[in-house]
Each structure stands twice: as structure tokens, then as C-alpha cells.
Image 1 (cartoon, rainbow, N blue to C red):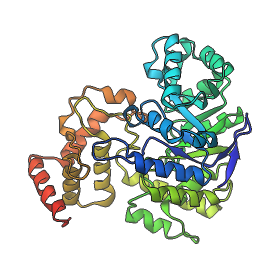
Image 2: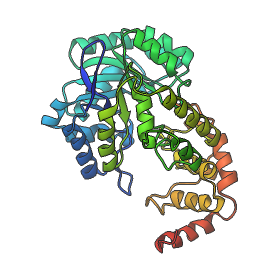
Image 3: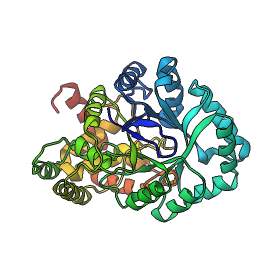
Length: 401
């Protein structure tokens, strides 16, 4: 395992961190605790020392689950990060209320890295005016939090104002080779680093979109490389190549992903990509932008939907249609996924959206979700959707698909 130092405090943190937003789940949607426990403890036993969670992850169950997993000696081995749900803060006393509750949920007396969750320019102004900087000072002074930071999903132009608004220890931004110029982006990362902030990167694989399955047009470009790497390695190496990045978070769902990331992290050196490799990655990024129709990372901030529409699943099916082709297969897979055949939990189809707009307010990518769901309906539903659900049941029951 390679480690990099947090600039302000000198903490040596593993270059790969375990993000607890996409833990393995059971058919009912709850965390598969046995599997997830084995994965997290294996990661820690092999050098991972940064664990990231948040109040809403896994419908509020991620923090209590980690409190159980890390109890005892494992808590001593890691730096634990969680986040204030700033959208739920209505007054100054709410800040203490949530932090104290999070300490209990996580079964700890302190949070090593505490973030204001999912800031944009307007939410920063709101929480700032409620006195959050005084709260952070007090919580650091009494030892409940050790380092203060924020995660960001706003525009590049507002990022500098947030960085300059407090004496932050670190920040967390979305960054990958497709998002080099979006949200905080490359310029924001450089600015935060110039102010001495540690940089934690989320979505290095863009919600798994850069991991696979990989369109053949993309693989053809990867295969041109003189030294061969997997798509996941390419994406992680691109982020690690930046020496200002301290930790890269990976939301691992399967044990093999933990093992792979541990192996990849042994070679995550800064400034290790050649000029030709950077050009190759740039070509891959251009091709992905051409193929990918909806800019969704699968973060699931938009669910639960009041109408029980699985918005990320709808968008994944739509993107797969355009990246891999096969209209009939895509329609069957859409019916199977939303009809509960593949995961055992039935969700409403995109056509059940009533355009309430609740999802728009929480989407980190600022997508016009109701409008995009309309496109999903046009391409993947139609009047025969119920017949396709029944057909999917037969196909998957007989293992013929």
C-alpha cells in the first residue's frame, strides 16, 4: 500500500480509501453485513486506513453498520470520515444534534475527518449564515471532530468562495478523466491544494461507468497502449497521477474489487503516466462523451423517489442502449431490472414519474431528471412493457438470456 500525507496535519493516508456508499446488499435492499464486514476488514488488514461514510448512505444504515464493523481494534487502525447532512440543518443547535447522533451511530468518541456534505454555492451560504464555522471551531476544540472539510458538487465558479470561507483541513471533490473540467474540476483542485487543503477524490470511476462493461470502441483504444492495464487501473492511475490528490475513494461492492484495488494501489505513483498514456486517456474520454447520453454517476442521491422510480437504473439502461446497442436486449434488461427479476425488488418504471422535481434539487450532477426519464420512456418502454416483464421472467428462469 502506498500512502500520501495530508498537508496540514501530516496524517499518512492510504491512497485508496473505502467508500461506504455502495456496499453489497441483499435482495431486500439492506446491507449484506457478513459480506461487507469481510470486505472492509480485509481492506484494513491490507493497509487501507481511510473509511468514508455519510448520514444518508444506504438509507441511513451505513453509519450504524460501520460502528459495528469497526468496534474494537479496527477503529484504532483507521481514520473515519463522515458528513453533516447540511440540507437537514435548520438552526445552530441542529449541528450539535446531528454530530452527537453520528458519534453514537458510529460507536466512537470522535470523527477524524468531518465534512459538510454535498455543498454548492447556495447551500454553503445558508449553512455559513447559520453559524457553521463557529460550530466547527467548537467541535474541533472539544475533540468531537479532528479535521474539518467539505464535499462539493457545485459549479467551478463557486468553489473558490467555499475554499476561502473557512480554514479547512481538506475537501472532497468529484474527479475523473471525464470530469476534469466539471464541478470543482482540475482548476478547483489546484486552487484548494494551493491553500494547503488535502484532496480526497470521489467518483474516480464515475459510479462504475469507467469500469465496465466497456464498449468495444473504448476497448479498441485501450488496446493500443504499449503497456496494458485494465480500464479500472487506467482510471485510478489517472487520478493518482496528480500529486495534489491525497486519497481516492472507491465504493467497492464485491470482494474481488477490494483485492484488485489493493493491488492497483501498489503502483499509484504521482507523475507516473507518460505523455502518450495521457493522450490515450484523453481519446478514451472523448469517445465516452460521444457515447454516453446521460451524465449520471449512479450516486443514488435522487432516491428514494416518491413514486418509487429507480432513477439511476433507468439511466443506466438508457446509457447501455447507446453504448452497447441491441434495442431488443436493452428493453428486456430494462424490464427485468425494474420488474424485480434481477434484484428481487420491484421498482416503478420511468413512465411513473409525475415530475414533482424533488430529484432535481438533490442531484449532484444537476440533471433535468424528469425530462431525461421521458427519453427513457420513449426508448425503452412502450405499450408492451408488461409483456416484456413476463418474457424476462421466462428467459431468466430458464437461463436462456
